[in-house]
Length: 201
Length: 351
Image (cartoon, rainbow over all chains, first blue to last red; front, side, top):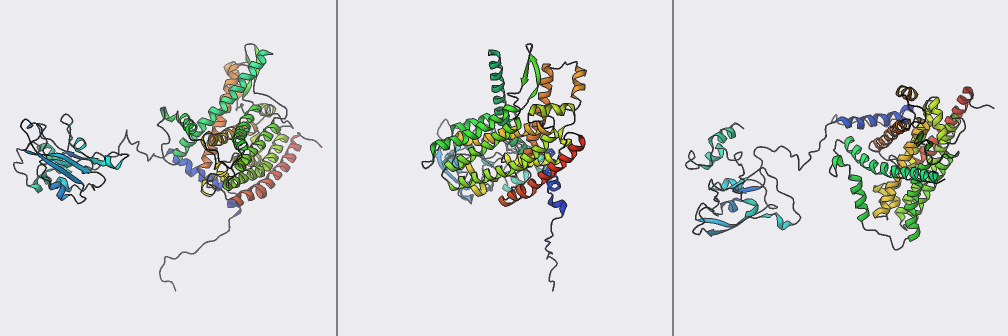
């Protein structure tokens, strides 16, 4: 009785004289491999070429500065609380006189570390941040030889004053509305053109 | 006398250097071609287009730790790879690279030596190469190495028989000469030997694959079963010599096949081309063009060797022996019989 039609009849046929010669078969095989000479290479020559990433790719975090170059982070710890992988630790400190150009508010993160081996790049830290200080970027996390080297401190996370990192792809209008950011129109970080562009995609 | 010695010295060094250079760049071409056949890019980091890759590989080999097992026979252990390399390099001596050419008023032969038993010399030297592998495997005092070397030597010996009979048929076609130069010169006047020896060529080609331990007959060194075969215990440059000798053998067997069956440095309408260019016999340019033609053929053969390697899976040991003894040997005998009949009607042999 046939229950399904998935069974196959096993064929155990004897090779014909032509097949026993092997040479036609070998020639056929060589033509197949030979045809691959002219096919497109699958290789991406990595350091020179990179794969295109999605616009919302989540990679290596950045700690943003404001337009004056002062760090936005106030070490509130919401990102560390939000982090499901418990990858973020920080130590806060009070801003001293004369440091107004370095830190935007009176409290700042003296130490801010993300363990890149623990991080799952979910982006919840970014969502939790009330100060728009942390963002995930499309940069890939480097390879290292030691596990300790994957704990990124402020030196690797904070953006350089002269080398700003564009996060407009992740800072869209939808995000701003979700966070109900006050003074949206006047906020320096919300460039209206970029928001329009972000909305289309 | 002095000029003679200098001339011989120069040509010896030239052939030596050529063999090594071609073998070195064969390794690069092998990797490149395998990559191309598998939709990859291949080595392209060391120098432009990866051209310095063979140097990098060689340098790496030299800096590897040299391990000679305590239980091995040290003298034989070192003798093994040396012998393999020596025989691989010696075979180049009888190959005619180009036509004779006048250099400074004297006619020089572009061949180290044109002995009248060139083919015998070639086969003799190739057979000695088996000793290198056998000694290397035995001196390692390791069962995998011994098994590998036994496989290698039995394979080479088995296929030498069919190869030898294929060559006998070739010798009959080319009028009983054993000199490689004469075989090549005859194809200059008439057709290439492949026209008269198509079956012989196929047999020779298959045997050449087996003789050089190339895929699909590379089971002496199959990593999966024999942990590297006869060179299991070898490291550093001794291993390098074994691997390198394989490439030299591939180069020489390509050269021999091109000379035996495809007219060596001759090519169709060569004389017409030389006449059109106004080159007299013995011109340097004839030698250079002929050498280039020869090298093109060798390059194509080497590429086909590699193409086969990256297409076919490996033979099983019993299949290998079956093919050698029960298919190729009767086929080569059949080929010999057909050749004798054909040559009788062509008038090359009389009874």
